[in-house]
Image (cartoon, rainbow, N blue to C red):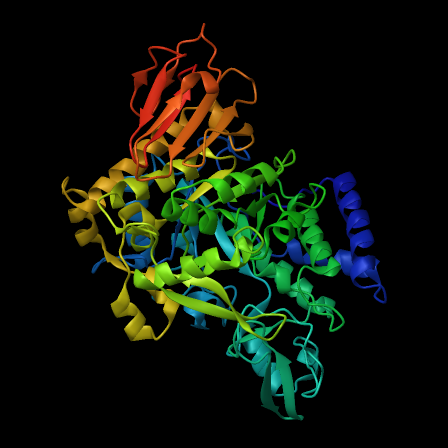
Length: 586
């Protein structure tokens, strides 16, 4: 059986490192005892699942599909079985990993208000189904670390005033000044709760059904480490730390990205680094770009961080027809440190977050983007800003509908090309790509589901019938099949190119505002790829001499499988066309 390393030297080193971190978080605790308690909690979950021996951290073959456990359903299968059937039949050749969004019992927020961290929803399947998926794919799951459901047994025990749960949640006086607290929502921060000890006001960052856990109580951290260990025992090897930025609270601060939060991430990193198999931490921090970057730490926090600024900037670029902001952002992004990587995505179950575009898009540009998305059937979720005035937090819309039109011309004939262009760029830039399952099919906005649930985010959480999905994907003329085939073909090309390794060199090129261009070079320097993307609805001519192609090499466009005849000549790009020019084919 595999599990945490048993080597005495490694164990002592881990305990020593944990003590140092814990002394910063809990200066008044016996941190030697606490470190031992965390080690014991991490080792508490029994037999370990085993991945193939040749599994590695990541390379150009890695690509994740992001899905709910019930995004695909079938009459005679559990949702997990239907999902696994589709993944094995249609996607195994193209995707190395799958991120299944929370699949635990929950009371709201489509799974992110968890009422039992270690059970599987009965309507989805069981832990055996999870392990079967983990046998075939690198499995990512959420550790919803910031909060739990109001229905969770811990919170119910708190409401009964059981002594062991007195400090599991954050009590605040109703008249406390909370003006410095940064919120991702507009709902009241405090929820009054009738307990057996009287009315208490508890902290709720996201909703009144999502009660924030109190990590100032180390027992809470120990329990969540035990949950983490349980996930590893089922074969989960990528842990997404949901809403981690809000973990620690200090009323003298904005309560986002506090030093203690970063130290908790380092504690978790120290623990997973003792595991015999590679376990990766991915931090989910939907915050401005410079704050998001801080979760790499010094290479000692998250292995992977989301590129949260990419979705709104790429969407804006394709609708505006210019690369000005996208290019400025790319030039400002540092290469991921050794042992770390970016996680790139352009659509998600939530929508398109706007906070990561703050300071990158101008206010008027942000307003225009929001108004255009509303024209395309989308909605806007708001947050309480520091000034008290609501600010747009995210756009709730399916990416397929988001790219139907441009700012200049409205709805046009280039919808399909624009949608494929977005994914061509996603697959080429530095980092590990993740594709939301509904982007693979071009699923349109699900307005009926919004009516049924009453929640804006449901617009991009459609559920496909497996037979119906297979039918449309097997119909060559359907838009769903065209998109599916087009994206999978690009993934297949990407997987063979060492210059698309997540950590391969990347430089931004300057070929005019309509072109978003960058150069990738493999780690061994045996391949270069020039990625040229026309973001406009116009035909654009490129002078190849501006790229400085080495004239003694034979260059070819990987996408069209077409050689470059004259390295000093010109190349015309059709609206929204992308080319991947390489000097070495693999």
